[in-house]
Length: 116
Image (cartoon, rainbow, N blue to C red; front, side, top):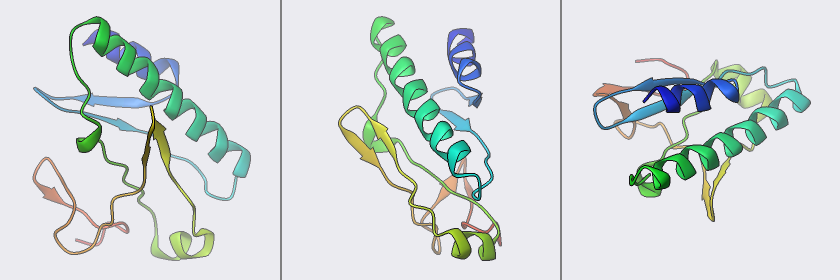
């Protein structure tokens, strides 16, 4: 598990580890296009390295359970209308739509603007 924390830290991401789950976190300023591109590239490389580590350690990363959640103030999300996605091997991961009861994290319901 320390290995996963080192991999995430190497790419500037924070990681939260649970019994059979993990979550990566990163924040960015949407008006900084270069920073946004750099974060996307770092996240994709981090995914690739985590996947390689898991294969080496006889584990499996479930692509179908991998989600991308983009949170922000409603006016910022509307203003920038970011086209956010991540590449995970051959799978493109698009943001989870956070409407109604459609997104939970550890049993807590979220929406994209954190209005509960």
